[in-house]
Length: 535
Image (cartoon, rainbow, N blue to C red; front, side, top):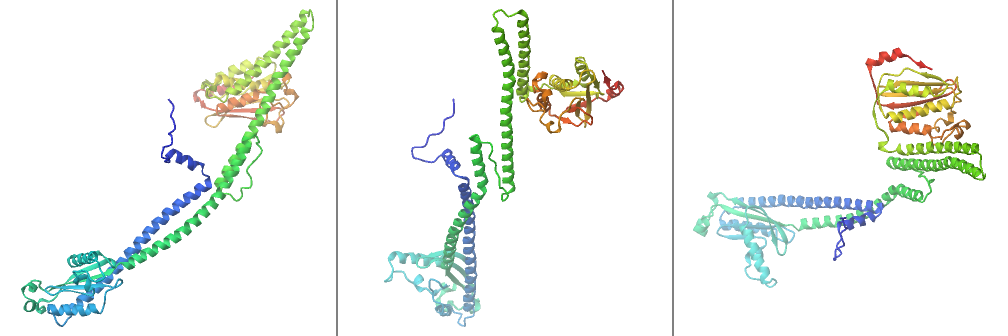
């Protein structure tokens, strides 16, 4: 049972699948710009939080230091007062506070003297218990609660909220007055004496400056953030346009190639980065490979059609000639039969070669197994050297085993030897096979002949399908033009290669190199004593 795609929700909610589709439909430039915007927004947000909180923390620390200084100055004023009675201390505190009236931007001062009460520069915050003319009962009740909080607040720093001022930073300290000079008992009775020599000092400062500073930071960041994000969006779009330009050109070239035109290429990449240049070079190289592949395919189809059409034409013509005679003689029938059989055999070889080249690209093309090299080469050489009259020479064969497909390797070597036999003169024509070690585990088969040779400009093309260098290599000689192409396919399937080497004398030299050789040291001596074999 197949998997079905999730249907859209009735509420129109965007699902993850639909979101990915929408994002995939957006161009690279806009996606890059959006990504830069998101990164800039996150970085700006982190910076804003850090600066916003850092500004508040720094200003609060500065206010705490000012509060500590004001509390210390008020405490020294009380301690240095000439009248150390409770009432005298209260009067000294009042005189000090009258010189520093309280406002929304100033410092709140108050002292609590046991037995006397509270002295402050904001009397309405502590003295009123009923609403005045300008305040509602709710506001007055809130002030009364705040007054109680100021009185009962613990020593040290704390933050309270005043209705008319806002947040208030408060510092309370308990100041000890020397007991021998603190005359309370004889003036205010036993209850005051229970307080000993301790006076509570309170200093508060509104946090409006902190709020104003943080609001200024927020406004500045909002303005600067909008301008920065707009500039980043424009810059990201321009950068994305520049970066994606070669990709858009590649897409345009790919569209032309898809339409059937293989000639467009990507040029003028001098101002691009290394990665784009590498991608463009790989793209151009891929197009070159495709062009060569299509050209080779067209040539292959044309050559294969021609090779198959020729014997069919010959067969059809001979049958027409034979059918035109009412009573053809037996000799004519036998001649046509021989010719038809020869053409059918030629077509069969061509079809077999084409099938072999098609199978060369499959993984099951080879069946590797260890081959006793000395016995294998000798049997192959005996089978080829007895077929015709040539001057055959076999060099020394290294002792060891070669991991290869014996049938495919024999086919490749027979093609090379047959090619050498076909292009040498009967009787005195030289056909030589050398087997050489190449490195630790590689083997080279060298087939030489003294025939007409291969021109230098044709040495790379002789392994192409249906390629023939001259008239001596046409279909009249019995070949299909696929022998060396099959050799190359077999060599590459084994992980080796084949090439036309240089022979100082007249003739052709073809080298087939394969991996997978393992030497047998115990048999090297026997192989050396055998020496080259000649027929």
